[in-house]
Image 1 (cartoon, rainbow, N blue to C red):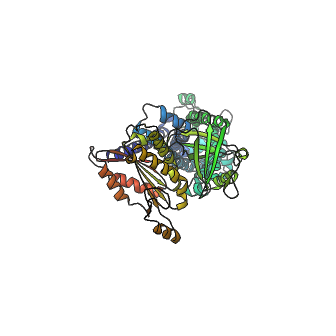
Image 2: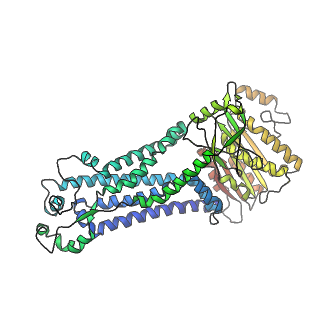
Image 3: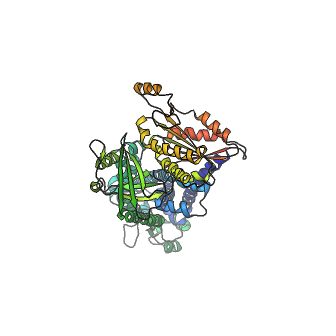
Length: 567
């Protein structure tokens, strides 16, 4: 319970800090524009919508400054691996970088909406200032700029143009429209449905962010919102002169006020992150140019492709992942895949399941008809970026670790189990780690085939080394047909499992997590247990609930610390 509370507390602190900064910026900017003397005359025309527009713009700039940082994966990897202040619970927050990216994106969308609506009201108020029935100070301010040596305050110079035309005649209006359209496309194509059904559409549309940032940088150059200049404020006292607007042309004590637009500031907020992200893309391009040698191609059942590769100075840790690009399929797209090899091996490998346009195309170019891999010399070029750290690299930091995989989510744990296997082969001890529980829930029996050899070798090696107690694995098959059920029943009494060939028999159906967590908690009282999961969100929520339920309120009791693998 303590572990879960601390982990959740860190997440809450991050979110609350982000909200607090946004709230402070909004209130501070709002109050400043509501009370600043230089914008007194501007408020006569626009009212409080001026403050709403400027306060939301400040928050928009702040969030645009943050939005690129969570997706700068080399920067995140650097912070995660080298910073001495980034340890334990705080380091795990870096694994939630995409969640924070989404949170900031919602902040951008909310503030952009407020900003857009406020300016639509502002534009209408500018129009009303030029109306024939406008009178008093409002009319006097709107007519400024009609004679020489006067600067205008109202950018709408005539009542006879419609709002849309006036909007598209200004730099601020054009760039605002472009920014809004770009943001709508990015947000709508980022839904989970689009990402799962057409990742390519999501990927390409997301790169409209370049247009978004260019538009944002020059948006303020239109200077549609104007305030009184500092020199004019010294000559024209607002408090004294606002009631003498009829005498501005003649009175020496109240000369005509002069106005100018505020200098654009968005670029100052975003310059640093944009430069950092540009460096990120340069690093990716440099890695793209590095040679990747494909040493082996294996075609597994259930449309799973295994690739063995080599690359100069490539170093990895268990549970890390890489990004792969195949220029012959798409010259721009990078897709994440978990490494399934161990650091001790002289190559690195991935298992790729065909589940989308890009992965299906990759399977076609690497595998010939009849599921036979093509000759290595005829294979297309691949580019690799990474490796990058994930939550699974912390498995060895707990005395007891529970690894849970669903379907193809088993790939991160292949690297981990291989690393455990090699350490046992080399008669190495596993400092800090005394027990590993491994659960794999899979729907298709044929999907076990590529992973069964690894488990069988691990089972045999651990028995020979006298370390069979170190690993306890449980495989659950959730889907089978009538013929399979009959075959399983006929061979149930054999010494090895009919599906995997392992001594440990396969379970049929879904695990009872209450019973599993209760037994683990009973076996390891007063222990801190790391729970690592890779799979669907629904199961993730269930496991999080189990971690909270079976963690002791007593600091000296058992504590489950939940970690989810994210890309």
